[in-house]
Image (cartoon, rainbow, N blue to C red; front, side, top):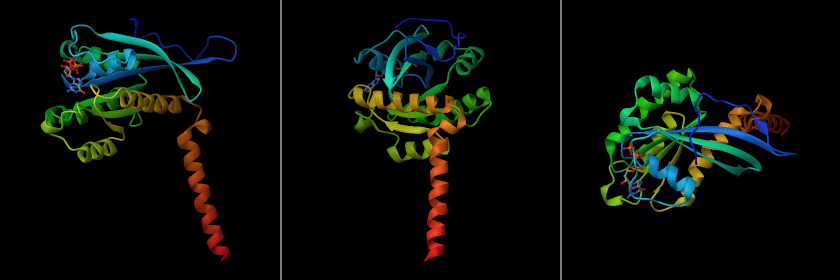
Length: 218
Ligand SMILES: Nc1nc2c(ncn2[C@@H]2O[C@H](COP(=O)(O)OP(=O)(O)OP(=O)(O)O)[C@@H](O)[C@H]2O)c(=O)[nH]1
């Protein structure tokens, strides 16, 4: 991985005949000690490393194929402890999507989530921001302070996707969470009629109409 300038926001780029690179910038946020760095390192290297250097802000870069599209991914892990509000807001403006972490063994980290989501919405000036809420450390069941239902409810209230997982135990669920967020971002970047959510809305409306007209025929 490598570091690069946050303000550099490129449009979709072509990296060869027929191959479209989709740039996606993700920011990982959450209270201290929730596993933010562990998740980034796990996703990039597939390895779980016990302890990390928290002093520096790091941008991880890689590319992944998601739904037949090559995604040029950047994940920013900020050093929350030393961040000023201004630099945090600048990171939020830079990002297209957000992984919001809490630890199931740290209720305070769960209670912090709405405050962070509010800051994201205020900074982005939008209520529709691609976000996945991640409940980490699911392997530490005996120390659980937040139930999965509470997490699900909060995700619904805050209009986020939701995943409960253990970065330590399962690489597949870490990948699933990041891929879920990439799909939300890519979907939001599409022109309106191409969006999955738009197509679903149209399909539901048509189904309702068809059902109604069938009922009327009967
Ligand atoms: N048991 C368990 N420990 C985890 C898991 N994920 C992270 N940890 C541990 O939790 C501690 C904190 O992880 P970090 O990745 O440093 O957390 P962070 O959110 O980046 O921390 P700050 O940078 O201080 O905000 C480390 O000791 C990790 O080894 C997990 O899924 N299960």
